[in-house]
Image (cartoon, rainbow, N blue to C red; front, side, top):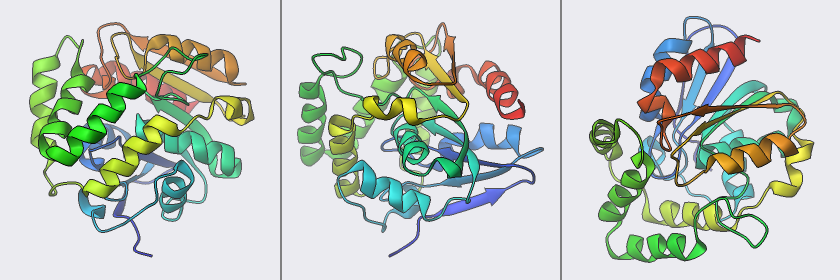
Amino acid sequence: MNLLYHQTLGHGPDVVLLHGWGMHSGIWKDVIEALIDRYRVTVLDLPGHGRSRGVRFGPTLDDLGAVVAAVAPPRAAWVGWSLGGLVAQWLAIAAPERVERLALVGSTPCFTQRPDWPYGMSPIVLRGFAEALRQNHRATLQRFIALEVHGSDHAAAQLRQLKALLFQHGEPDRTALENGLVILECADLRAELPRIGCPTLLLFGQRDLLAPVAAGEAMREALPDAGLHVFPHAGHAPFLSHLLEFLTELRAFLDA
């Protein structure tokens, strides 16, 4: 099995940063620079993304999580954005000894709406993305990142930033993108949340269309040890739109 691209920088307690669907670890550049003075930070490109383009995985969260876990430190604080946060939740449930703390950024245990879970995307919308991906994956990725910045006070600047990063290391593997959408549609960890015993920080943008604040509030109730911070004028990527506030919250949590 090919190993994922991963890089470790800095010295101190281990922290792992996981990016979201369609992106790569370059999204964390400013966060890495702010953390490496006191942490050993590991970043990786999810399979099929960025510099892990040749690494394959199956269309389940178990498949994706196992590939990520294979290159990660034995024990660390995990910071996961969106799909990356879903992977981090999976690991905190499957191998709790490996997750010291958990920070989830715009990430929920279930990204699609269900009869008893109105907090997320319509399955029809996600399937529409999957269909569009088969027609024109570049245009579909650009539509998706526009959705990620929607509602932010700095949406135009963020969109330029994301577009510049998107294909920086080539185009993501289309099968990996399709598998990622299947996971976002099908994965549901809600029943397992009470098993995540480590301290957890939920970081949500007030205007996030993909991971609504109401989902964060429901998660805070279900998790044994969780705090919630909401960025009032942010969309799905508060670490881009509200970097200083994001770093203040994250560092305080990691230092605790």
